[in-house]
Image (cartoon, rainbow, N blue to C red; front, side):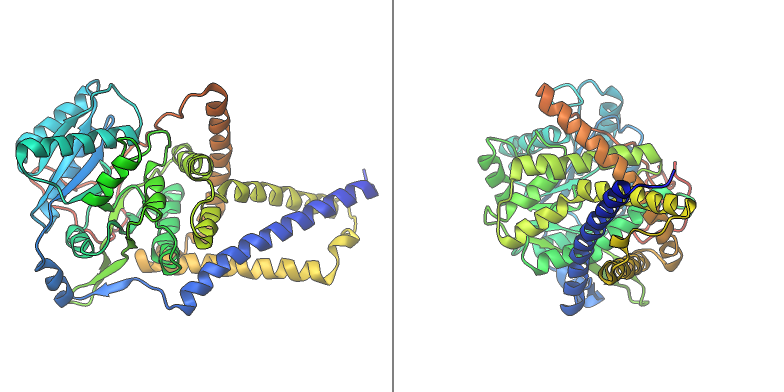
Length: 474
């Protein structure tokens, strides 16, 4: 049945709204690109002589805090591989376990016996799972309490996860920058995955762009630096100051992104934050990022669950807890951080508009007059070109971190990423509404973790920190 003028009018209005909103989002991203271009922002390069200078500094004592819930399969390889590879002496892993997770507790205890100088098991006073923030708070409290008996105070506190592969020089880099910064974030990247792993590859794309450009722009403009949850180093002053401010909590326990909250409030508290994106240039000329690497979910629904946690914590709980504080620049980046759900709605509306266009074509009807103006066509063309530039920007970032063959997959994974983000936003909204209605906190949404196949295998060598070729996940 032909469309009446009412349908044409409503469809034209919806299309205009979608195109105008898309233009706003496009201009937002182009602004970040423009700042990066005009300021010449790029990862810093560290040569051999600079690395030697960093290594010559006195080593501060570093406490690596790792929250675990049912991680018996990965913490063994993680600890063995990292202990073999880390080129730093003064550090200890503090493995937080729950009393009702006996498998993880037993595995952690074995590691404590194997590496008595490097591993300490911290048993939570509560049964699990609680929240990641609660577990990390428990670890921090027990570390500080134990210092009274051990006589050894920790200078730096590091957030890591049970599946992380640490760069051999990560602690050296953090130790160096901790001279004049209280909060230090280094990049987090995904290991290489097979090209057929489209979902896993989404994380290659997103983290490559965010941690080689977006966070550099954020720092250049003076905005607060959010924690990525891993690769985050805090000074003792920040830890004790945060505990005092938050009534005994280093990390807020009523949010699923306690790490993000930590980074955002560190700046208004007067602490100096720094994002350190550095490439180590080896004597043979090869370059590698000093970063935390890990595998991210490779299954569709697992990715939706994980991203729903990020969306819920940043966009919904972040607004509830942080509101719009800080400088104008801070508020701008808070808006960028929280635009995920709005972007997902825009994607959904865009699909509806495309379907509407298809119906018009199939019915042989002309394009509504409101959509034939030169200004509308110009906006469409601008958005199309900007979208192409957006994809090229991401491909460039992926080439820098992984390789060009992975970059060729970006356009395909771009479409899939929008679907994942849309479903994650819907799930996050539903979870937030439910928590508001019942008064219950959203639970810790755990992600199944995997390690590189040969990393930390008993009797084996440590896995190199550089990007790996396609490997089997398992």
